[in-house]
Length: 343
Image (tube, rainbow, N blue to C red; front, side, top):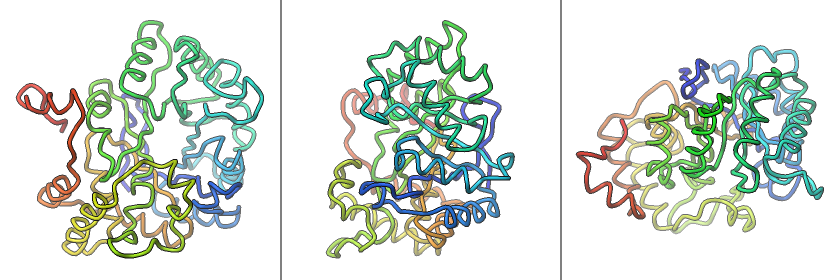
């Protein structure tokens, strides 16, 4: 397992992280992801640590806190060996102030997450989404206070647009506040919008990408294929879950999977291993968050590291997954001499 610098910080993280959305299965939505209990989660953590994967990503809304509680139990007695990241912003309860990135909600969320995780600090705390209601100065001032109090080591964000992130970074610089070093963003072979604006911004401003749903919401497992029914365990069988995930046309998925099949045969790897390895070759990516319902899936995902796709194989996958950009990106692409693709 290789380690990479997290954005412009001095902190390094493993190239793969384990997402804990599969821990708990506390409601219909998360049951479609998985339902690992403490015993299974502990076994998964054991396997991760053996492989050098030391970073575990959670969120307060994952099974309404159950995922954090289970992760806390699974890492008990070895907190110093792991990197814990978690998130907050989305509504946690019907209470009026139990949502967003206000000072009230962030302090309350961090304190609750610390308690559930059984720790006194969070290595990377991320805003789960942008809060357009709360002033960025209030948000960043609160996060800075939490960093200075030792409750958070580094801060990041998730699902921000380019101007959201740049506005926050400018405010941090202006007021001397803690700075986002990570952006947890959706990025996959069938979801390359991240490359249009967020990737160049990340490279320019030194913000590491923490990639979520690297297999395109379960579509790049190698089990979703043209003319075949969805596998019994696919989260896509649950329409509510499928609708919340990124929209992707079926024929586009099949085209990309065809290319993945070709590269998988050339490398002797599986379709998801190739899809994950492609992401690990992309600029700005610090770590890719993988999920696992069970030990078998985890070991499969771990097989995505320790080797590299060739430039020709990357080019083949790039071509198969290429899409028409929206404006102004298609216009900028026409002037590659002044707007080269990030390397």
